[in-house]
Length: 104
Image (cartoon, rainbow, N blue to C red; front, side, top):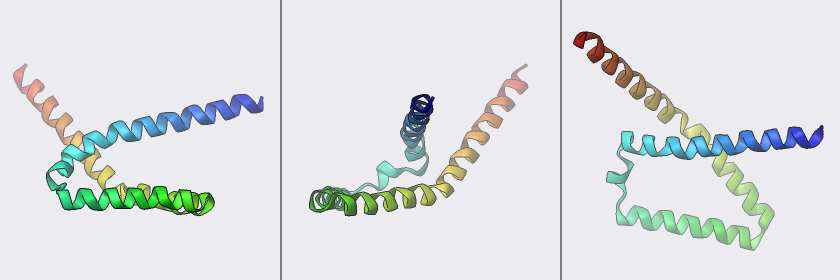
């Protein structure tokens, strides 16, 4: 019984991560993330990533704690973007429905 619950939790987490990353692609096109990505900004991202890996290598527990905090912060800071994405999707649906109703 215990193993079934663990497997169900793992399936849910896998779904959430998969949905998150697939959804990320739609968000980046809405906010124009790629247009704002300069080589300097890319270097900062690379340095931050290397620091994160270095923190894990230095002390696993500290790295895990710090990156867990950053991942939680990422989720919280992404809420306004989620609202924008939902609004844009809703507007696109309304526009599409409006065009199909006017065509008939």
